[in-house]
Image (cartoon, rainbow, N blue to C red):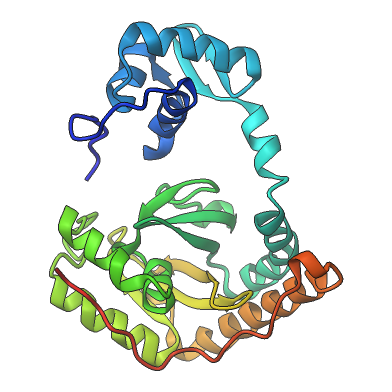
Length: 279
């Protein structure tokens, strides 16, 4: 958890592989890194890291401010053109804004990224801008409501859970789940009930309610609301969050169905059980 040293990973021989490691060094959420930190987190020797960083700056993939580097605007521009996420975010944003207006909680749209959740979109007001979540940010899937929904429904969910357990379940707060058996129970419940409620697993005082967004085939995103524990309620909010998720799924289908290469098939019914491998 939180370590980016590469002692146990063989350094790629290719320039492209090393450049990827440099860019991945920012995945912890750090905005700007000195060369020494960029080298340490990526595992790329300092001299090589310097040469590659200079080239990445020329390509617009990194920006340099004094002695620090940050991700470049070119990465953002390219990311906006990824077909799947672009369509999903375009459809979801106005519907998420409507949901925010109704609940006055932060609204997130996430997908699985390995053993983490990746935030594709976020709508929040000044009163509920949460420090732990931002577009492009990642959090351990076991700690979040969106992560549990996605792990429960993913076809390779058991393998991802086994990887999480092998690494040791992250503890973001004293209430984060660190027992593999407890995690297995909560994932089974999320698969059975079609939603996940997380209480203070990411931030003390906050709760999140998440539901799946069924996309093509067996692929899913997850939609969630996050706010103070007293403000997030299954009874008050589940139906409207589920309705928004279904409207997002229908909107994505309409946007892509005209293109045979990206036609969206009718999603299969949600599974009612999930087999969890805990090590």
